[in-house]
Image 1 (cartoon, rainbow over the protein chains, first blue to last red):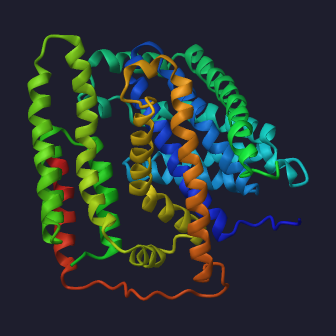
Image 2: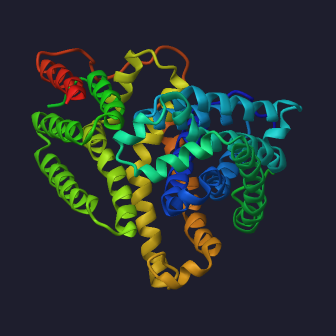
Length: 202
Length: 222
């Protein structure tokens, strides 16, 4: 079956719904993990993406076209914008473009390959992890003081943000954990969705 | 009667930026303005519900702020984040009652590309539906003893997650199919300019919203 490579209304609807679901999973896991912020803040978003990877893989394989990753990143950025962090929009678009670049090479069938999509999501994920600290770099700490964060936490956050070792470790950790999440997710997808006939062509 | 969609969005974005930069007094002012915003559109029940929640939590957090124990301090930290989001939810609640057609027509006037527009509307629209689905799945999981409410299940977080996410994804697959079938029978893929039943124009009533936007901007100086 020859399929067009352009996104259609159906794909937009799919991406919209699953983007929201990815956002929700990230938010819920992030909330549950927030006590760990003191100890290992750069590592948290990796764990969030570990859980949301199944949603992304299902979406990516179902759409299977160029631009799905970018559109997902842009809409995630827009959701953050509506929640007040306008800064995140260009940053997420950047992360989405990096993800698309990972997927770029190939004849068009790579968009349906779980392996390639996993690497793309891991690349997106490692940038996503640093995103939390962008607000600190750009706006400084005055923001958090007004936010009534305790001074201990602010000190901790600055320590993480300006320590290259922690940041590099955070990037690497997000990449590896997201990839691991994708591996487990692909097993889960095989177990539940391929057997049920929802994902036939992968 | 609703305000113009574009003004409501301006209000939402302004409000969302403000709640992160104002102090506690400013935040209360923003909440009161959001309360007036809902009230002037006739959403009386929601307006009172949210404002009561807001001030209830505010009183709790002020009480906790002076607590000596660090556990309570931590609880306060979560409470403060929730508190910041309530004015946003108030403004978003009025967008939530708009018919989707009007929302899309209004946003289209802002020259947002159709791909992003469609994806974003679906994402925003589906929020309450997904929440309902999650609740239903959790209820049926509860009957089988697999619920998140049972602390014993938290010993295996991955399995717990699997039990939640797989039915949810199955349901969303179905939802996507239904929604795109319904959209394509209405000609969403048709080429050409699309028109809307809803006329998007500024009316006299919208002056109230402009005043509220001015007020909310002024709360920055509190």
